[in-house]
Length: 177
Image (tube, rainbow, N blue to C red; front, side, top):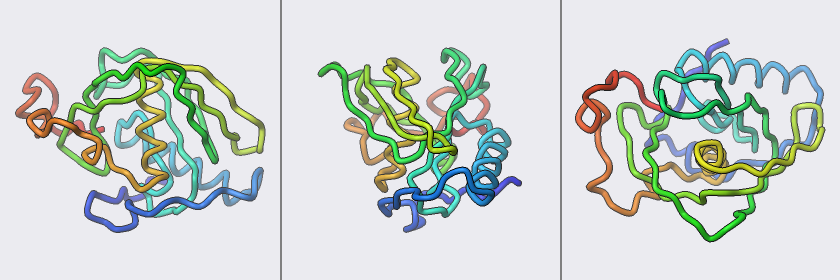
């Protein structure tokens, strides 16, 4: 089922999410299925539970190809619960980001270039990966939602923040994040 996505300004997006404590249960399976339906319908690269009003430390992300990020490499479809991130170097990389909760806008956001993330899948099985580039960016973006942070809060140069159709007229203006 496709669920409504909260938009910037909704105070629920600014809360710190609560840990998931029950795994391999029908309610969690249904929530994850709804999140994937919602993310795919919106052509997103990822989605955090708080974006649909569920205050849990649960994110999904991944795609083979994505029309909103045509130059991005594939990212494996992943369910990541109660994640922890650890930077693998001091290197920071700037990159354009959008967000399904901030429709129509993009901004240049600094992120760790390489990181290790770990957490659990919906069955309580441990996930542990070292990633870089766009994959690392997507994970950090989704993790921020669990901390009540939206990407515009990370922009350091507000001249690098604006509407997609103005910044990138070659892209479809309806493509958000």
